[in-house]
Amino acid sequence: MQNDLLHRADRAIAESERLLDQLDDALRKARQLNDWHHELQQLRTDQRSPFINEMNTRP
Image: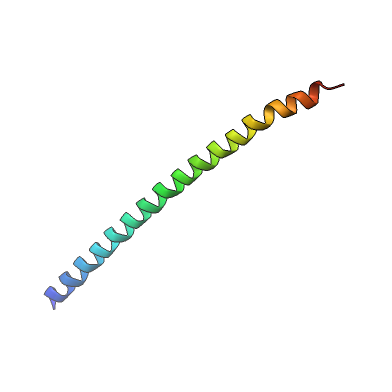
């Protein structure tokens, strides 16, 4: 009985560790996507700035 409980506890711990590893991986990927999104937004802003500046200086 006690061995069965210890075995079940060990399996639960292993499953929890596996899920935490998956969560860490998902968070790492989410941070990378967020960084890329920010870089793309910055590139778009940088590319539009000369056009916007030109439009603002036209009579």
